[in-house]
Amino acid sequence: MQTAQQQQQQHAGTEMVQLATFFLGDELFGVNTLHVQEILTYQEITSVPLAPDYVRGLINLRGQIVTVIDLRCRLGFEKLPDEKTSMNLIVNSDEGLMSLLVDNIGNVLDIPVDRLVPPPGTIRGVAVHYIQDVCQLEDELLIVLDLQSVLQLA
Image (cartoon, rainbow, N blue to C red; front, side, top):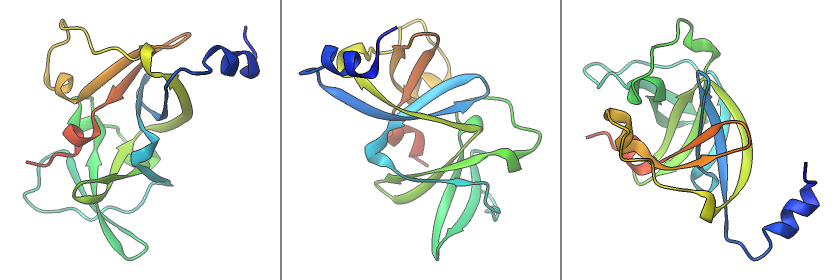
């Protein structure tokens, strides 16, 4: 097992990316921290009539109205029986602030860019369009999302 200092020395000179991680079920996902503004516990959501299924509604974030995307629904996961245990990952997008509804928040990880690889061509289904890269960690697979694709409402 390497110490943090040994890992830093090993990766000195290697380009790194910082990822905010979160869980949907047992699956670990990440997005670049450059896009993350803050993390909130569950907020009351106001529904929007005729919105797509993955748009859960709107929240009021200190006077700013923010669209809430149910990431479980967007990626084809089963709906949670109690969404009040969910967390809001507030991210910046081209359209402004948006909230990703996730099951749980993980850690912020510094990953060497050369460890990120495109998803294998054998992955099929709706979610493949939202995957930017994957990275094998010590004991699990990290799926890095293409945030712009995930947040595209049209």
